[in-house]
Every structure is written in structure tokens, then in C-alpha cells.
Amino acid sequence: METKRPTFLPKSWDLPESIRKRLGDDAGRQRLMDEEGHLLLILHQPPEPEDNEVRKAVLLWNQPGGDWKSTPEGGGLAALDAHMTHYGKNIHDLDTQVETAKTPSQFFGIMKHVTPLLRATRNMLAVMQEAREARPEDRRLINFRDRAIELERAIDLVSEDAKAGLEFSMAENTEEQSRFAYQAAIEARKLNRLVATFFPLATLVAVFGMSPPAEVIRAPGFWLVLAAGIAAGLVVRMLTAGGKS
Image (cartoon, helix red, strand yellow):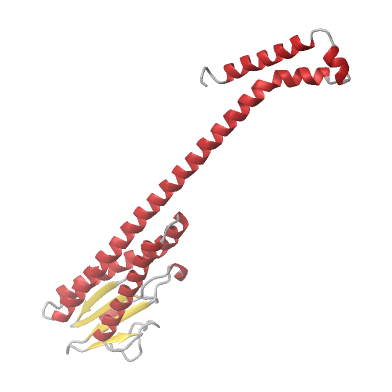
């Protein structure tokens, strides 16, 4: 019984049954199939966060005669060249974004693109290494493998730079917040000292404020009470200062 043809496989591709029976309804992960002289490479287009983990497949088929076919873009190995160029452009764009990013939110946004692209590039490199080993006489596959190595190294450097930038920006923000908190604590300490200094006096004023000012000033012992209030405030201030000026 002939295996059902997957929808992502072109109808004109006459792949052997040994390969078709290994294919599911979806293209699945990036991988290589080498059966009966037919070589099928399943790659993924550069992923984006909005893809929701649904990868778009790029297929390359090497026939026993040596001819290459590709989908969704035709051209065989020319399509593979364009595919890797697309990866290179995305990596370069992310590298530029890392250089201009300043805030943690900007670095987080970049990492959302870097992480899936790094994983996809590494998997593509693994497939190209297998292809190079499966067809050691085809120097074109050696060159494509080497390009995949360069892409993997480039996106790895972008990932490391983005992580370092994220950590630095977060540390910088934490330091700035600590500095603001320290300044606020100093201001609060000054305010507490003022309150401690004038609280006893304010209490006495509130008590005397129940009488007319002229009577308060002429009251016996007014100036003594006032001096006692100021002295008490200074004592409280010294106690709250903890012995420090």
C-alpha cells in the first residue's frame, strides 16, 4: 500500500516510498533522509516569535542523478544559497539592534528573536554536516556546511552580546534604584530629625495655644517652659541621630 503523500511535499516530486513513509503530516524538525540514492533535506525558514512555534519548511531534494530540486522556492542549491542569505540578514539585523539597545525591555525584545534563531541555525548546521558526510564528493555541500558554521558562530555571538547587555542594563538599573533609595533614606532621616527636634515644642505651643497670645506671653514661667521644650527637642534629636551628627 502506497503511503499517503504529505501536503507540504510537491506532487511532482517522485520520492521513494522509503522516504515518504518517514514523513508525517507536517514537516517536523530539521533533518536529513538518505534512502535509495535520494537525499532529502528538511530545513526551516528563519523563525519569528509570532510564528507560535509553527515552523515553515524548506525542502531540498538531491536525486540519484545529481540534480537538486527545492521548495517553496525553486532553483535547487540556488534556493539553499538564498535560504542561508536570509538567515545571515536576520542575524545581522539582530546584531545591529543589540548595538543600539539600552534598556532591559529592549534587550528582552531582542532575545525573543535571538533564541529561536540560534536554535534553528544550530539544527540547520547539524543537517548540513550530515549532508556533507552523505555526499562527501559534492564540494558544494562542503561550502554550504562551512557557511552554516559561520552563521551559527555569528548568531551565538549575538546571543552572548544580548545576554551581556541585558545583565549590564539590569545591574545598572538596580544600582540607580539603590542610589535613589539611599537619597530618599537620607531625606527621610533629615525630616525625622526636624520632627524630633520640634515635636516637644509643638506640643507645648498647642497647649498654650488654647489661650490668647498676649496672656500666654505674660504667663508665669512661659519662657522657662519654652526653653525646656527646645532643650527636650534637642535631646530627642540626639537620641534619634544615634550619636551621629
